[in-house]
Length: 252
Image (cartoon, rainbow, N blue to C red; front, side, top):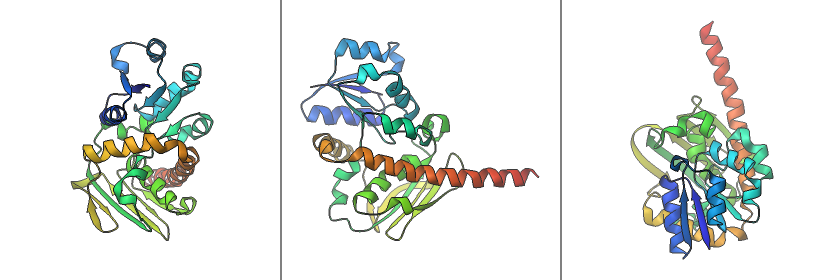
């Protein structure tokens, strides 16, 4: 089948390798090439659209190009939308990419405690709330919430905090799920249930995407993504109000 990948960044390249691993014909599109996406779709006539651009951009495309996407399989990278786009996302005929569900660490997972330490966001737009909708909670928290959901955690009851907006540090917690992430670290490490893990190697990531693309239709990922986005939206809604209130007190 023909696959058109929209967005040529880190995720887009991994998807390219995964689709080719599965034997598909892969094409690229990026806004910098000067053409319009609808023209690219018309000329290539792809079977699959794979959105790896920024959350704001992909939601605008999905909203405006319903005729071009109709009849085609549509995938979107995480997070599938910004919290402010949740209502639009609920109506889109598209599948979110929950590739962490196909990583080795998820086998026989009964509890989940995660620590993510990073030295700043690896893409500047990740901290642009207009493009992304938030910060590290959307960048990393989204993955771990859908993993938690998949092992039976009631993520609707998650309590969370963010340190600023966009958030450079965040935390999530329930009785069976604990998550802490920061972009303010001096070094990079991921710890899952007390053990150091490396999830970003090309081999692991490409295989997880390939397994995802082969099995995604058997999972109810759209509803799962909506549960995740509602949980994230609830944290942002409550915590941003606290931050704004605190800023007003400082001004006084």
